[in-house]
Amino acid sequence: MCGAAAPRYHPNPNPPPSHYPGPPHQNSPSAALKEPDAAAAEEAASGGVRRRSSSDAGLRDRGLCDSVCRLRPHYSDPMPSDPSRRKQLQMKIAAASRLHRKERDSAPAALRGRSEPPAEQRQVGSGVSRSAHHRWSTISSLSSDSGWWVERTDSGIGPGLSRSWKRPIVSLKPCPDCGVSDGAVKERGERMCERCSKLRTERKEAILEFLNTESSYGEDLRIIKEEFYCPMQSAGLLTSEQLSVVFANVQELIDVNERFTEHLQECIDQAFDQGDEDLLTVYIGEIFLEFVNMLPAFQTYCLQQSTSVNMLNTLEKEKELLRIFLDVSQNDNTALRRMNLRSFLMAPLQRVTKYPLLLSRIVKVTSECHPDFPKLCDAKSRVESHLEHINMKTKQRATACRGLCVLSDETAAKTVKSSI
Image 1 (cartoon, rainbow, N blue to C red):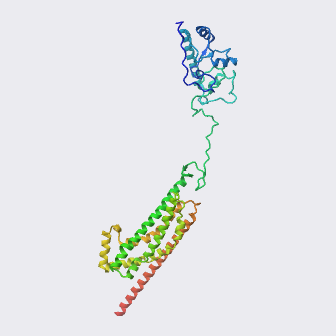
Image 2 (image 1 turned 90 degrees about the vertical axis):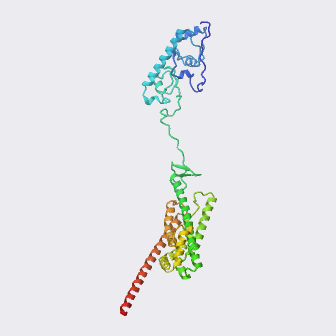
Image 3 (image 1 turned 60 degrees about the horizontal axis):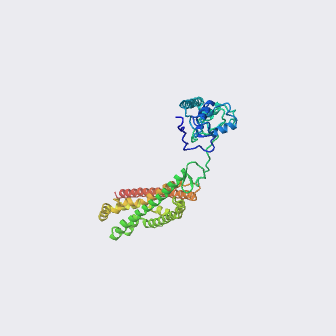
């Protein structure tokens, strides 16, 4: 037993950083104290030569090892070869660990999580008390007069953060639409608040809806001309005067719609080609004001609408061939979608009444600082004023027609009385 080599500690595979004051065993709860007699026995067991650890040298230089026992040996120091001495050392390590846990658990919870002491207590020397040491370090098991402050080995997240720590302030660029710096931003090549991003999407949808509905309205106008007007004219079902009364100024509406739709489509295609995915460069208000001359064409058609429907009803009763043609077209012609001529003749009236709704939706989702915003409001007000004028004229015509009917009835009654 005496001649056998004494067991040695295996080196720690993860040595502590250079800023730690001592080896890793001094910073762990398993650190223990050695009394002078234990040190002497170890020295005798190792042949009279005992290796000194770096912690011993530091403590001796500070004059702190005279009255206290030193810590557990360095991991390169030999363990005592005597089993009784080894057992005694293990018991002392366990006692020191229990003492450390007891003092740590007895400290207030609010103080156990701090990672470093105040400035007046952060000093090296024998004046630091044991309670103050354990108050600020939850890991170190150094002796009360070692004077070393041990840093925490955890991640530092949680109660160990200093009270003076503040979340870094991230500078945000203002929103390009509303000019407000908001925390809820979205990356779209430029920082934009969530509200303005949503408004841009809705504005794009409203513009595309405007184009799609205008194209659908143009298709209905072309159906009126190609599926009803031209066949009835070529077959001689109606005279030129009757056709002009039934279909009014449909050709004028077709020409205006083609120019308006073509210009609107070109502006949208140009915006997409330039990379404007939100169609910010498409000015619907400006385009509408350029084609505001189509509103009088709508007014002419709407004022003749009642006369046109009455003429169609009368001719359908009088002409059997016309009635057969309309029935066959509605049932067999797939382009009509099983709609009759009267439904298609209502398309211009429905379209002009829908313009204020479409423009209002675009105005609602357009920022006030957008260049097209005032023109959108102007276009909306012009359409509404034309609609009011059309309604007023329609009422006046209806009143005049009722007056003429009353006069004709009175004249007929007088003629009958005179004849009697």
